[in-house]
Image (cartoon, rainbow, N blue to C red; front, side, top):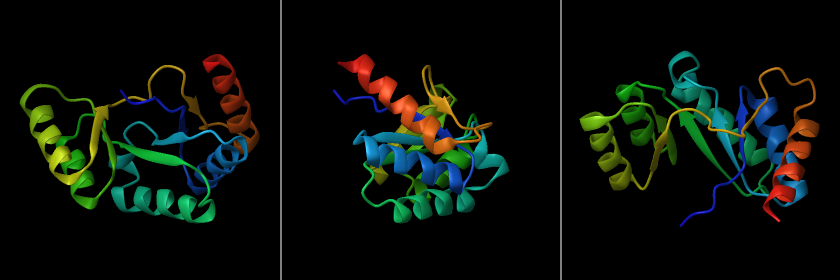
Length: 144
């Protein structure tokens, strides 16, 4: 059984980097999530760049990343093919089963779209590093 990491929804490079700085400082692993549907409006190339640049800026942060493709099987398939380790997809049935098989073949992880309960969304954050640090401190305290 895997441990569910605290999730932080990021909308740009500054937020992703701030979240990873807070994660590294707290010593708490995190999952960076793209905004819901970001694969459609921002593009997979941009999201790959954001996640890679943030990871390069804060290499000591223990993290993983999920790109949210909402209900687009085409984008989810492309994301898995591009090597995204985590892909969120809202679809069900045969499409989900097919994507799960592709994820398994590519060493990826298919998760249900949506950031889930309890995630921090930095959409309107004026201080993303401080808010991320506060969120991670509270999440860690609840786990003890």
